Length: 179
Length: 165
Image (cartoon, rainbow over all chains, first blue to last red; front, side, top):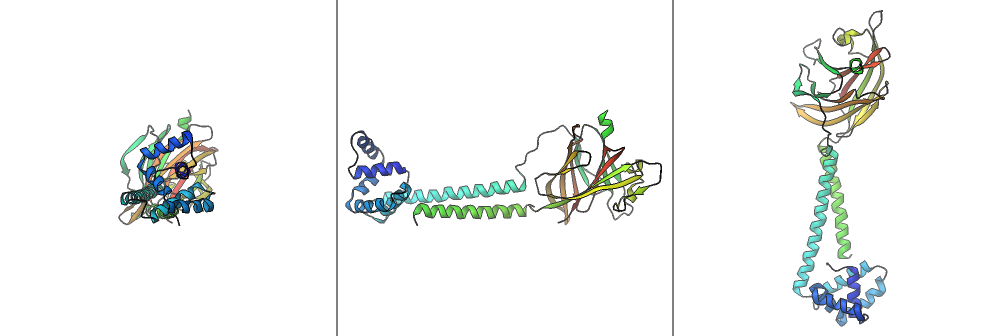
C-alpha cells in the first residue's frame, strides 16, 4: 500500500463527510488522480465498511498505523468493494515487501561476512622494500614485505638438524637509523 | 496478526538468520582467535662468558650465528600470549615505550599445514617509526625474530611464534 497514514485518515474524513472547503477539494482531487486513493475512498463509502470503520476507530484510535492496517485487512476481507486487479496489486506490494526484506537480510549477511573476514580492512599505500614473491628461505618462514626507514637485514640461521626448519631474524638497525 | 506485523516478524526472523549465517561464514573463514606468543629478549655484551636465561630453551643453538653472536648475555624480559582475531590489530606495549602491533591477515592451508600470514608494526615512544610494516607467513610453532631496537646498552630481540589454537 503506497498511501500514507495521513492520506488514509483524510480519505476516511472525506468518506464520513467531515471535510470542507480547501481540504475537501484537495482530497477529492487526490482521489480523482490516484486510482488507489479512489478505490480506498469507494470502499470506505460502502455502508458495511463505514460501520466497521467506526468500530475500528473506537478500538484503535491510539495509533494511526493500526487503523491503516485494520482498514486494509477489512477491505481485503470484503470482496465487493475491491476489484481483482486491486487485490493482485496489494498482493504484489506484499510480495515486494518480502523481497525487499530478504534483500536487506542478504545484504546484512554479506556485510557481516566481509566485516568478520577482514576483507573490508584497507591498507594505506606505503613506500616499502618488497621481497619478491615472498622469498622462501630454507626456513618455512616466508618474509613477504618489509618497510622501515632504518637499515634492514634478514638473517637465516640453519637448524642443527635437517628435520627442523631454520630460523629467520629480521634485523633493523635502530642506531644507524637514529644517526 | 496484521499483515505489517507479520512482515515485521518475518524481517526480524530474516535478520536473525542473516546474523547466524554471517557468523557461520566468518567462522568458516577463520574467524576464531589465534594466539601469537611474544617473547622480549634483552641482549647485551659483557666481558664475562655466555649467559642465557634458562627460559629461552631454543636460543643457545642460535647464539653462535649472526646477529645473536654480537651479544653474550640474553635475558627474557617478558613473554606474553596475544590473542589475534583475523583482520583486527592486537597491540603490545614494549619495554622501550614503543608499541608492537600484530595483525593476523589470513590463515591458509599448504599440504595439510596451516599457514599464518601476519603483519607486524612497531612505532611510538616519540621516535621515528622503527618498523612500518613487516609481513611474514609462518606455520604454527615456527618462531621468527625481529631484532635491533636499542635498549639499555644492548638490543631487544622480539621472538614471535604462532601457537595453534
